[in-house]
Length: 118
Image (cartoon, rainbow, N blue to C red; front, side):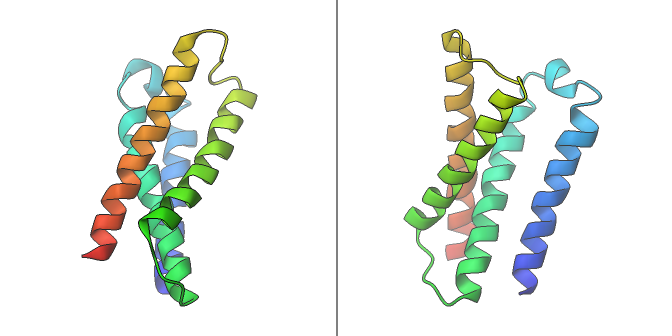
Protein backbone atom coordinates (compact mmCIF):
# COMPACT_ATOMS: atom_id res chain seq x y z
CA UNK A 1 0.00 0.00 0.00
CA UNK A 2 2.93 2.33 0.76
CA UNK A 3 4.27 1.91 -2.80
CA UNK A 4 0.87 2.81 -4.27
CA UNK A 5 0.79 5.99 -2.20
CA UNK A 6 4.37 6.97 -3.07
CA UNK A 7 3.99 6.37 -6.81
CA UNK A 8 0.62 8.14 -6.82
CA UNK A 9 2.16 11.10 -5.01
CA UNK A 10 5.01 11.12 -7.56
CA UNK A 11 2.49 11.34 -10.42
CA UNK A 12 0.54 14.07 -8.65
CA UNK A 13 3.69 16.15 -8.09
CA UNK A 14 4.73 15.64 -11.71
CA UNK A 15 1.29 16.73 -12.94
CA UNK A 16 1.22 19.79 -10.66
CA UNK A 17 4.73 20.77 -11.73
CA UNK A 18 3.63 20.62 -15.35
CA UNK A 19 0.24 22.29 -14.90
CA UNK A 20 1.06 24.97 -12.34
CA UNK A 21 4.73 25.76 -13.00
CA UNK A 22 5.73 24.89 -16.57
CA UNK A 23 2.51 25.86 -18.36
CA UNK A 24 1.87 29.25 -16.67
CA UNK A 25 5.49 30.30 -17.17
CA UNK A 26 5.44 29.09 -20.81
CA UNK A 27 8.47 26.90 -20.21
CA UNK A 28 7.20 24.32 -22.70
CA UNK A 29 7.49 27.02 -25.37
CA UNK A 30 10.77 28.48 -24.13
CA UNK A 31 12.48 25.10 -23.70
CA UNK A 32 11.44 22.98 -26.69
CA UNK A 33 12.95 19.84 -25.16
CA UNK A 34 11.16 20.04 -21.78
CA UNK A 35 8.26 17.79 -22.79
CA UNK A 36 10.70 14.94 -23.55
CA UNK A 37 11.84 14.32 -19.94
CA UNK A 38 8.32 15.04 -18.69
CA UNK A 39 6.86 12.27 -20.87
CA UNK A 40 9.69 9.90 -19.90
CA UNK A 41 9.10 10.65 -16.20
CA UNK A 42 5.35 10.28 -16.75
CA UNK A 43 5.81 6.86 -18.34
CA UNK A 44 8.06 5.87 -15.44
CA UNK A 45 5.45 7.07 -12.95
CA UNK A 46 2.56 5.29 -14.64
CA UNK A 47 4.53 2.03 -14.77
CA UNK A 48 5.52 2.40 -11.10
CA UNK A 49 1.94 3.10 -10.07
CA UNK A 50 0.50 0.21 -12.08
CA UNK A 51 3.18 -2.21 -10.85
CA UNK A 52 2.50 -1.17 -7.23
CA UNK A 53 -1.21 -1.86 -7.70
CA UNK A 54 -0.55 -5.19 -9.43
CA UNK A 55 1.89 -6.37 -6.77
CA UNK A 56 -0.49 -5.29 -3.99
CA UNK A 57 -3.23 -7.39 -5.58
CA UNK A 58 -0.86 -10.34 -6.04
CA UNK A 59 -0.88 -10.16 -9.85
CA UNK A 60 2.30 -10.93 -11.75
CA UNK A 61 3.95 -7.85 -13.23
CA UNK A 62 4.91 -8.11 -16.89
CA UNK A 63 6.28 -5.65 -19.41
CA UNK A 64 3.22 -6.19 -21.60
CA UNK A 65 0.81 -5.27 -18.80
CA UNK A 66 2.76 -2.11 -18.00
CA UNK A 67 2.87 -1.12 -21.69
CA UNK A 68 -0.85 -1.74 -22.10
CA UNK A 69 -1.68 0.36 -19.03
CA UNK A 70 0.63 3.14 -20.20
CA UNK A 71 -0.84 3.10 -23.71
CA UNK A 72 -4.37 3.45 -22.31
CA UNK A 73 -3.34 6.38 -20.13
CA UNK A 74 -1.31 7.97 -22.96
CA UNK A 75 -4.36 7.74 -25.21
CA UNK A 76 -6.45 9.60 -22.63
CA UNK A 77 -3.67 12.16 -22.05
CA UNK A 78 -3.10 12.90 -25.74
CA UNK A 79 -6.88 13.14 -26.27
CA UNK A 80 -7.04 15.65 -23.43
CA UNK A 81 -4.23 17.66 -25.06
CA UNK A 82 -6.21 17.69 -28.29
CA UNK A 83 -9.40 18.72 -26.47
CA UNK A 84 -7.56 21.53 -24.66
CA UNK A 85 -6.08 22.61 -28.00
CA UNK A 86 -2.51 22.00 -26.88
CA UNK A 87 -1.91 20.18 -30.14
CA UNK A 88 -3.74 19.91 -33.44
CA UNK A 89 -3.75 17.23 -36.08
CA UNK A 90 -4.25 19.45 -39.12
CA UNK A 91 -0.75 18.70 -40.38
CA UNK A 92 1.91 16.06 -39.77
CA UNK A 93 3.57 18.06 -37.03
CA UNK A 94 0.80 17.28 -34.54
CA UNK A 95 0.85 13.58 -35.34
CA UNK A 96 4.64 13.42 -35.08
CA UNK A 97 4.58 15.22 -31.73
CA UNK A 98 2.02 12.77 -30.39
CA UNK A 99 4.03 9.79 -31.65
CA UNK A 100 7.19 11.24 -30.06
CA UNK A 101 5.35 11.78 -26.77
CA UNK A 102 4.11 8.19 -26.70
CA UNK A 103 7.57 6.83 -27.56
CA UNK A 104 9.11 8.96 -24.81
CA UNK A 105 6.59 7.50 -22.38
CA UNK A 106 7.46 3.96 -23.47
CA UNK A 107 11.11 4.76 -22.70
CA UNK A 108 10.00 5.65 -19.17
CA UNK A 109 7.95 2.46 -18.90
CA UNK A 110 10.96 0.42 -20.03
CA UNK A 111 13.21 2.11 -17.47
CA UNK A 112 10.67 1.50 -14.72
CA UNK A 113 10.32 -2.16 -15.71
CA UNK A 114 14.08 -2.65 -15.59
CA UNK A 115 14.15 -0.90 -12.21
CA UNK A 116 11.25 -2.98 -10.84
CA UNK A 117 12.66 -6.23 -12.16
CA UNK A 118 16.08 -5.60 -10.58
